Image (cartoon, rainbow, N blue to C red; front, side, top):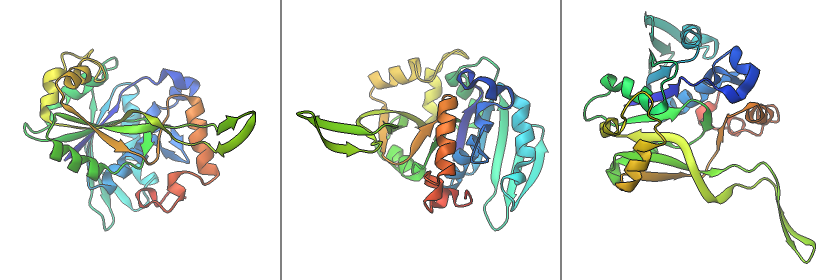
Length: 265
């Protein structure tokens, strides 16, 4: 099975940081965002990657050509200009194909552009390249296969960075330190699709989150896989600082003996 990572956006809200690197290569705790995403896929048995690039495409080529900087027990083999095989000592290897999908192509359009790399009857994963999560992708795939719909998305709880008070008659009755808001779920950006999704992507300008997903909702063709574990997107500099503070304070999921990122200490 393949994992398609959408890494072509401009990342405007990150401000000055994006002039150095595209958002997926911005580091959290000394490791790029995309590394965390790929490590989770690999942990769940998916090691065949298609990375859809746009802005600063060459930065991804440079990053993967020196990938052993981040994985010391790895060897990088460059197959072609845009294709890499990364060999891990005593581990199954990663296959990585980097595809330039246009500077201004929208999320749906990027998926359409790599359609020829996906088998006709193959299901495949898709992720944005800016969210760190310990989602159980293997379980999401099982869920998708059981439900037999065109699409499955990860439904995640909205992170809350502030303590919540319960007040009655001017007295504080309870204090919850930064609880997760469970009443609402949002799209966590981890999808499973059948090849039929391509039929709902009209052009390069199609946003995955608009017509394709809206249409599939009306057709009752989207599953919602609930994930209640860690999830945090990096949408702006505040988000980046928040995740780096978790790393420094050793409060992130990578500091809790999580096998996904066991090398991050």
